[in-house]
Amino acid sequence: MRRAIAAFVGGLVFALGLGLSGMTSPRKVIGFLDFAGRWDASLLVVMGGAVGVFAVGHRLVMRRAAPLLDDRFHVAPAGRLDARAAIGGLVFGLGWGLGGYCPGPALVAVASGAPAAVVFTAAMVLGMAVYEAVAGRAPEAVADCE
Amino acid sequence: MSASDAVCYNFLPLQRCAIMNDFTPVSALAGGVLIGLAATLLLLFDGRIAGVSGIVAGLSRPDGEPKAWRAMFVVGLLCGGVVLRIARPSAFEGLPHTALPVMAVAGLLVGLGARAAGGCTSGHGVCGTARLSLRSILVTVTFIVAGAFVVFLTHRGGAS
Image 1 (spheres, rainbow over the protein chains, first blue to last red):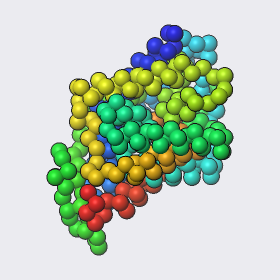
Image 2 (image 1 turned 120 degrees about the vertical axis):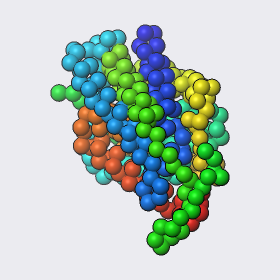
Image 3 (image 1 turned 135 degrees about the horizontal axis):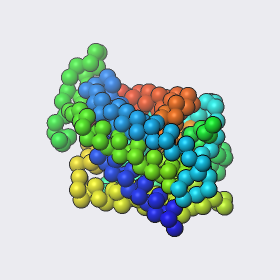
Image 4 (image 1 turned 180 degrees about the vertical axis):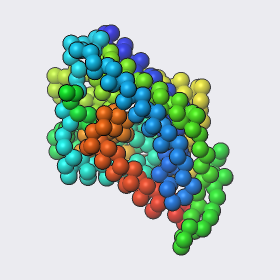
């Protein structure tokens, strides 16, 4: 129960960060990806802030033997960069550039009621399920801690 | 700012039309810090990585893994969306002319790609990159390049 509450708070703060930063606005996302046009560097700043805080935060947290509400960290060992991950990144990027949403912001934008976000998110969840049903699970993004 | 602010200019040899993009470093940095804090909180309390596509995909998996924290993280995202809708509606500014079938294709590609890559903008782009995982950094660069390519193709010649 306490774990679920912590996850809820994490999701809430994550969503507020996505919204404040501009990630939930396809216009900002496309502006960032429009390198040949009027490039908007805002999302680079978003990434810098998020990566900077988590780089310090995760180092401090991982000094502990275990998280506060569980007996171990659930951090999967990362796979190597193989063709599957590279092609996945490519396909992901095509969809991101086409729709202007990535998974987190799409879910947050569902609450805005925008039909584009609802349709995108439904198709995204379907795509995830189809992939795992056909090809199985790929290694998760984040490496194990030494 | 609305779609009527679209401007056209010449980009050799194509004429391109683009919406005016405004650089917003302060809100971008504040939002980025919140994202990093949320990821740190989830790791500190639950020992979990805030990778949204992995969290969502795990919800529908028929394995014995705990689902409650995943579901509550997603509920948190949705509640955050409701708060933003009230407090900051401009956060959801969309694109002019977004056809729903195009959005369906885009969503499908993002879902397939995120699972093949083992993560998305949050798992690879933020968490993996912060841990200096070479794989995450390369996947992140790949999807930015692929996204930029699509935007170059779809937004030229007055698409917007």
